[in-house]
Image (cartoon, rainbow, N blue to C red; front, side):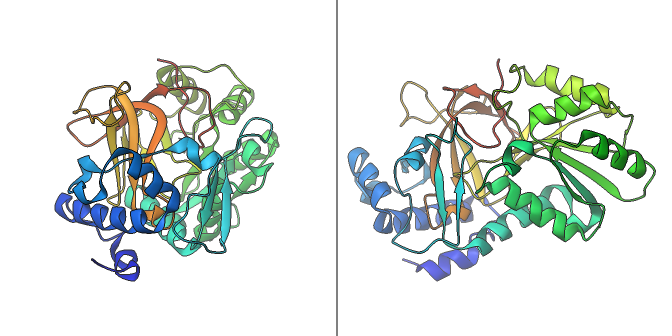
Length: 329
């Protein structure tokens, strides 16, 4: 059995399904042996010695991040990422042992889908996240802004007029412009300051946070496309409990980086996985969660397809999960 250092050294080197399965099983056994909460959960469901492939691995309910310390062994965390919660209550906490792993994950994933951060001017509209501490999304965007190495990159809180002025200045610039924001803030901005910017790369991170009425993805993206004069809207799928992100470049079809995988479970029988094109609960495998738990049963509903993409179809309930598209279908 490989040791922790050996596993850490190749969690981002996955290049095929066989390699992925092997690494997943190595991580499962490591976390079973070192994560008290996960081991207790697995004990209730199966004999760990019988876990021979990914389909056998139990997925930890994401809600346990709200009540338990989900960690392998005891360590002093370099960061504690917190979900937004309602009124600051019932928030998830992700104890991050090694921020280098998170940095590698977020940067490699961004490069995998969009290229190098220095190719962009990165503008961020994340008011609800900047107003609290411990946001993994803010940490991620801060890194992208810094690595863009462009003085024009930056955060915008509620100063929509300043953001509009900046976008007008950048319309005819040769550098790519990425505007990333929480959904309700992008909608508010788009309604107050519509701007024809066909080259703009617009990325919504999901969530109305109770500020606006939920809407289906098609309507949301249509409104944003119309206001910005763009042909597609990108989306990010991430959450406090994960250290990796999936992205959609258009049509709400998400793809994962090689060290992350989506499986769909039966909503009535959580231990049963469903085939492609069947709606169910979303299970996530995230190798970057090496020091917490890499096998998470989220409260999102979705489906996968034969091309390797997945869609978000809604939620089981209204609990807070950062970055998910809260869509009404």
